[in-house]
Length: 143
Image (cartoon, rainbow, N blue to C red; front, side):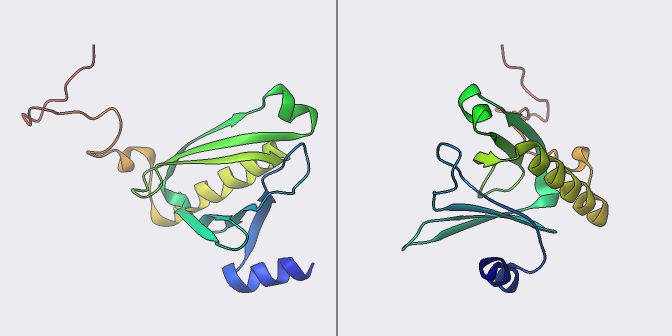
């Protein structure tokens, strides 16, 4: 409980927190923290690296439940975002992945409503399907 109080002081109101599990046990030094506005990944023990994604930038989410992870109650969430620093984020081997996906989906939806952002608003020049190599304003088709 003291650890949760420390995290709340550092990051504000926390919606969900989870750790990467090894054989179903959270003995990794990777922690995922979901606040109302951001998803933060904290990795390391002595040298700590933090990475965060603004939730309104997330445009796709998928859940993977391989047999080995399913046996121990874990799963992997994959996120795609319009963040230039982190276009994809993987939450590997987390406990109760469906609950985490539901909470993340609700938080993303709330942030999109807050900033009046929809999926079509995020489509831009660096969207994977946009490709205009010759610069004529017409998107090139991949064949």
